Image (tube, rainbow, N blue to C red; front, side, top):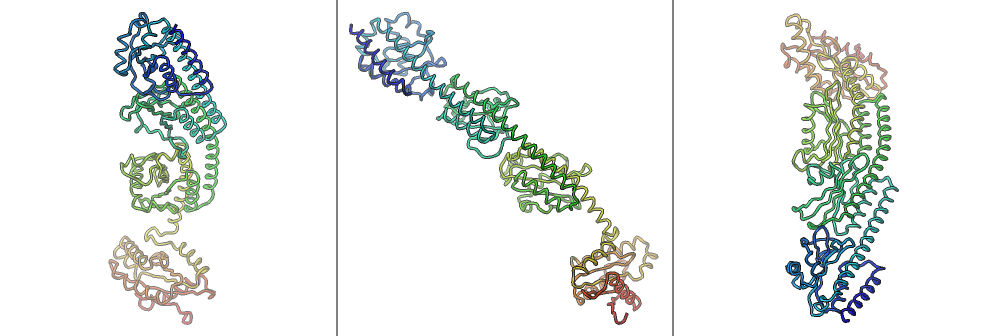
Length: 621
């Protein structure tokens, strides 16, 4: 009768416990504490432990967090003898459990509906319990506790699944309501944190994602990722790794869309945590749902970007078809590249006189010593290849700390030869997407033809404007230069120089020697006038010098210096005669008149003994 009363008391208390807790969610450990109060009241038992049966292991509830199996667990032992002989003490099981729980005196094996093990209740043995355990009511208690535990588990399972479904529904709503990649990524990260608040997690995405910084979102790098992460990314299958080096168990779920894999969701659990099948299915479903959302957002932005890129290329082509000079084209291109790619530094290099020269508009960084590393790397590449460069992390290539890590370089190819290049840099690694790289190639390749035409025009104009033998300006260029000066300047000086007895040099030493003398004189004339004016070959053995806004006394001093210098630098030694003419604003003199005056002065110098200069005097003339 006493055992029957005990059973009724336990039933009433378990019913009250269930009713009190039905409306609110409490932790499993709290259920155990409440049950301890019941068995203490009825049997004076102070020590109780519940071993939950999962994955062929018994996990002590008091050493695990809510729903997380953090201990190594106890290997499941067969309890068949216990079923057959309930009245006998299950010595083998109890003795084994005493290694973990010193108080172990008896056990109750709890079942699921299909008779599989649900868990084991380890009890301290007291006199009251010993007496009760000898009655048939112990099996009724075992059945009652099995039903109670199963109901609790079922309720908690339903609560957890509702939480998962609610979380997935809310994230799916966000995924379907936005085309912003960053919002999708943030929703995914925050959703995972709410489901697994005690675990760290991160998204590892392929490098064609938008580059706005988001916490716990990283770029996928084959050189740095763990093998299990790479396997998940490549195969599209979820992988779990026991990462002993970081004391964690890693779950890698691939983020999959209909057209590809966009990254991996990585969750860091404690080293001996076991992911349930429900958790794995939820994570896989979340990764797939977010993968579809990412893909749709990417396709949406890609379509807009393609339209924008085509507009940019069209605008660039239209501007390049206009009659722009080299500086105007490069200035326009630099503006377009800055607007499209927002680089930290930009550079245009063009080959002039077999050397790379920086074009106007190049960022100041490329004039610093630190830029030599980049320039050397790029020029070495283009010595053997015409292929563009796309570098995501420059530090990995040069094995040293650098200022800029991301780099895109496209050559300017003219007649299948590299004639220069455009380079854009950014301090962050993996900053430029592959789509950006393709767009830059398209812009520079469209521009190469225009730049080529300009360079050819400049070369042709240089041939027209220069004398082939002496490298001085040609007579036509000098005429334009003087006419412009007479419109803009206040005064100027025109000097005609003629080599004395030059025909005799050619007849005696040959035309090759004559040509050498012409080049020598031209070189020294240019050195003397420097940037104060221009020097041109007037024709035959005659050369001309024009000095804008240069005072007459300074001009005469320069001419005297030239006359005394020429015999010393020529072999065989020759002399020159010079005629000087001056003009002033509002004097009414034309270019033809200025030249005629200089020619008259030269004729006078020739007739008065040569190897001298004469200044045109209007009164004497």
